[in-house]
Length: 216
Image (cartoon, rainbow, N blue to C red; front, side, top):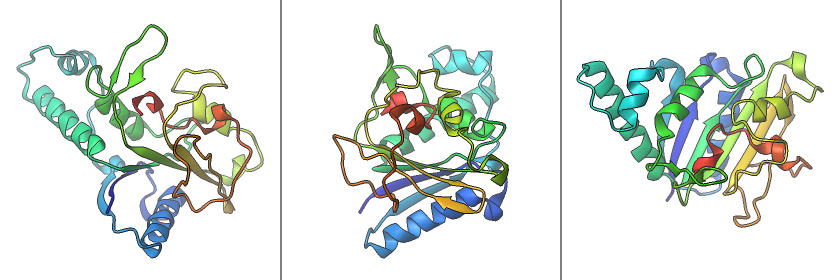
């Protein structure tokens, strides 16, 4: 039985293609006999705090007496605990304005904490979240169908080059408009993705959709 953390970030609720794909993915796992324990968050309805200067300082250990800041730090602790307790992380990441939704970025801001989920090295941050695979589910409007926006979408917030490799088990399922276009990358160390998808010749850079891929 796997602990599955599901993050839905679409602003379109039940009509969201990304959310529909997530539901299909979870249904496929259930049909395959996976007895998943689910924690599911609709990030767009959680009113996650924005990372500002006081919260940034508090997340780095500074004492802040403001109740709102203390609540935000407690929420960060909770979200990190959920992430570390997960076996599988399912991230819904539709493309808005050639980027990921604001609420998804807020979630990453709350869980990306030095010495908690990653540590700095001389070359690149090293992830401290072990044993968690990530499946990124993404859709984009029909106007983008047939256009190669996914590379820019994948790399826009991570700040890596096209050859960047997140390591760990990072897989992608995507759909453009109403036309299914499933794809995945099979990780060398962790074969056997749970994504009900066909293989695709995506480059490593195109698959790096998770903002904080360095966590894993």
